[in-house]
Image (cartoon, rainbow, N blue to C red; front, side, top):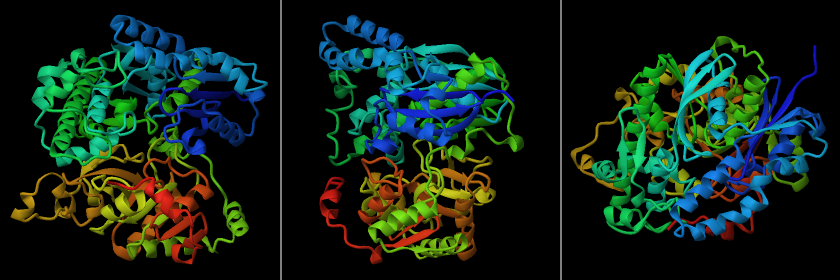
Length: 611
């Protein structure tokens, strides 16, 4: 056998920085920088994530053969300069604000990489941004061949692209170019409704069912010229992102009746109606793009990546419309996944290595459990050093106790196995609860997550039981598909309840699993397969034995404003500073009432308090 080839993929300096280590085409490790720095959406060079990947692979930097960076900085810089010159002098403030980072960091990426990786003497590759996205979508997928569609804000110039993946190659056939972007259109509404750009888009998606699509016509008439093939042109008079420090212009504000909502201020019905309207437009664009790609390629399978494809409602629509027989979505669909795509592009496309599909129709993503893990021994040592009361049990015993706590409507912090790669908690770093409880959604939002009460929670359901609860005919391991709750599980609403409006709808139970049923009877589903995470599957099986329900609530193990927990210390701190009842870390269980008091609890909670 020849020497193994180690490839480090990196994404940095835009949204979520990340690193990934690929060895001979096998994904060894991947993680976002934010999990180590504890700075949400950390865009800085992912030094900590790189250090983790190298350690997990058991190598040092001098044993790397290639490093792949997820885009071409000089082409992106060219786009920024051209844009500013086109709008000069209007864009001068934004220009001067962005230049220091470009001149100090972004343009000298090769030098920065070699400085950060002492001893590395291999080649550095710079695939284009959308080549990295396309590669992250196709190469880990379970398909020998597929159409590929990527949709995001903007890379170098491209804002959406489609192409083909076959065997060990991807080919982009067509691109939509900046400033015309579905991702930036959605982000403009995120900004206008008072949520944080590049992180609040999923809040908009969750808010949409509380509103009415009152502004759809205004969007089509004024903002977007949408073609039958899904391509679009934006009326740039309504936007400010090319030349200014905001997403929307005064003309936009006038069209929709006032200035943007101030962050943390009360949500109005207008905000809900705007969220619903842009969600419907987004779904229509995604559907048209998918139909066009199907017509052009004739392929039976579709792979998706790019930040917009984290819109699981839109993904669910593509699936429901049966445009393709099968779809696969990269779980780290945003820029973090670009690190993975860049590494795989180097292995397959540049080096020309053969791609062999895994057995049983599985993908190469390993459930996206690609981050660090801790053994029970390591966790117990950490707890003993601090004298935190805990009990260590056999695996079956700890699962029994956790399931009993869930059945008693306790909220459980669940820390198990390797941390997830991507924005979704998938049962490795999760906060879990009883899906049957009508109070669970509000309790978890307000007392544990410290976030807006309208935010929906996802169900984790046994893969073999999914069709007992949801109108979904496929597995959804990465929580990237929305489907409706089965009609026979829905609760008939009274006439008074049907007349409720906006956020008033929140407290009306919709089904016999109300904690995971959104106001439009939908759910963002994670199917749990025994092969991907055996312990999490066993927990839900035990809960089913006790209650008859093979489904629980799953939300990410963090509070608003913080990244998902990474270490046992992160988990314990989050557990103590919220109203979680139980913490399970591998074979160790901790109960809140037995823990010492956290003196700094009040100050920390005020940081996240909701208005």
